[in-house]
Amino acid sequence: MHEASQVVRKQELIHLLLLRVSLKECAARLQLSYATVRKYAADPQFLGELSLLSKSIYAQVIQELSSDKKSLKEQLTEASDKALARLEKLLDSAQEGIALKAADSILDRNSESARNRKIEGEMNNRFTFDPLTLMRAAQTAEEIGFTPDASKERT
Image 1 (cartoon, rainbow, N blue to C red):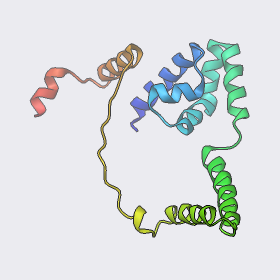
Image 2 (image 1 turned 90 degrees about the vertical axis):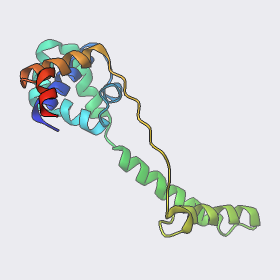
Image 3 (image 1 turned 180 degrees about the vertical axis):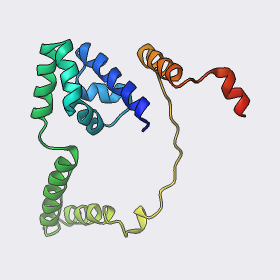
Image 4 (image 1 turned 120 degrees about the horizontal axis):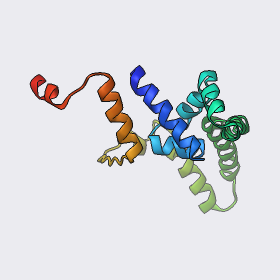
């Protein structure tokens, strides 16, 4: 990500936080990963700027940053380990249907099984922009000297 766009994203994040939007909701609105938003919010310079603007929101962000100890990846790993252990126990079930379903479930998750080798599909994206994002984009374009007429000359 370019430095200019990163600065814009951080400013948008500050504005959203000042509107008392949670970090997770900020990530969704800015179309960034939650980890990226947490990284921006944990930056000492960012926190200093936020602290100057609002002590109460600064305290909320600090609380949210410290309360979410486990990452999503860690939570998925733990849950996957538990699920696999349970499926392994179910393989030895006296009821054939349960054992068959457990075996099928384990095989479905194996990367070498035939079902998982090829994935075909269609991807469609839809983007929505709120007025704040559009204003920041226009501001960034102006800062880097972009003009609509100049873009026509390039093509």
